Image (cartoon, rainbow over all chains, first blue to last red; front, side, top):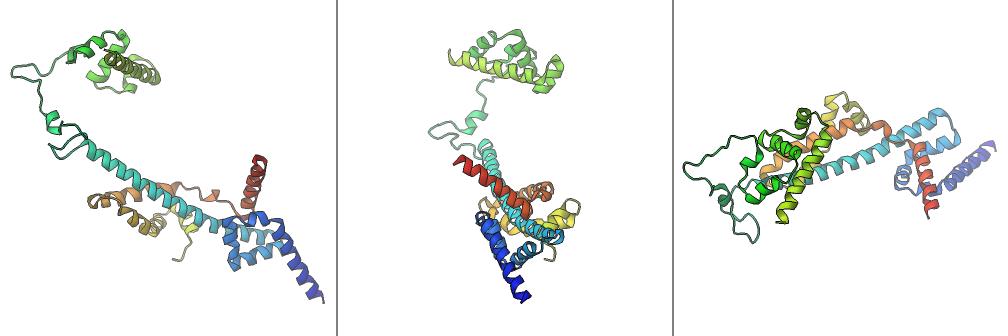
Length: 201
Length: 86
């Protein structure tokens, strides 16, 4: 008699529990977790006998189950996106380093790589390397030459350091005793100004 | 496979053998994604992906995975937010 009573009350509390959490049991992870009979048994055990041991058992089993799903998903995505990135990188490299000399560089453009490789400006006897620390002396484009004189002295100095001495922004910052952010900003600004001047004639 | 993925990944932080087993477990997925790239880059890609996986596995916070009761709490919170939003 006692057995019958207790077993029906056990089922009752399980049912109460399931109705109480009905909303959450629809969650795909929890649902699939509880679809496995052993896990359901663990849950029933917790409801009937809520000790720390039984709770921990359920908790750990679930954690392991959920981890497997989450981690597999995470790694699969990582593989997928990294593979795509790798392809992009390869394509970019191939695009920048063409192996065919006379293929068209751009669609509808007659220029080929070999056209760029052949120097048209150099003539016999011409000085190849101009030894000057002033960037204006290195320019071959007249509009750029004019534009560079419209920059401030500071900006010109910065460009000298960047393009003649091949320093990066943080090295320039140390040299000029400024912050790297300030150097980057005025570097960008100088290039932008040059571009604006050239484009507007 | 005697050990579960959970234990393996946990051990991977210190144990290179476990790390290798985990990477091997995912090698079919890696091989599959090699097919999208050209033949001559497949070995490179395979190596690159394995290096990335190494980082991913080592840096994964295994302990952050919620247990059963935590999961219910999370769902409860989300549920409340959802109903407030709606």
